[in-house]
View 1 (cartoon, rainbow, N blue to C red):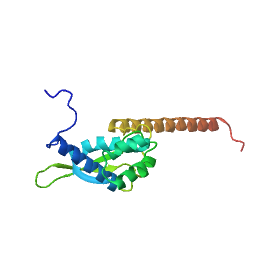
View 2: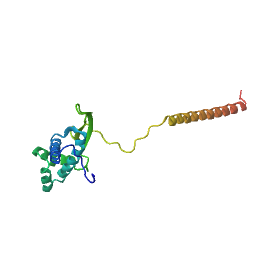
View 3: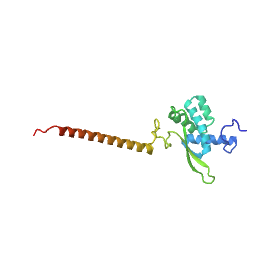
View 4: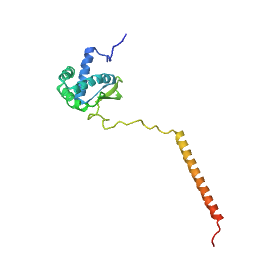
Length: 178
């Protein structure tokens, strides 16, 4: 039974998997985007989120823990410098996984992993919508609103005609001064 076994095996041994995730994490922290398979991207997201959280902490222990996983000085510099500043007010959700076309050859689903709010993020300038979106009116609601509007116009026209008739009747009752 597979109880309490978390994570994906990714079809490789545990040492290969750890090395592969370390390499991909380092590449993502250096280049701010990488292209990989969808399942690898989902596993990579967990590791990168942990590393950026260590970067936000910024103390010596966090640096040593990150250095045990990240493999380059450039990635460490980005992690404890640029990314720590960029994500200081964000509580998680530092990566975005964008599904792409399937790979030729084995038809594996591909994905682009991007760091959120970075220069390579295509959705960085979009602001989240506030509140609930207004639902579109159904045809029934539009027709009923149109009928109500026509009824209101007809009632107003009837009231105007009645008022005009009263004015005409009042003018006919008075004798003219000529």
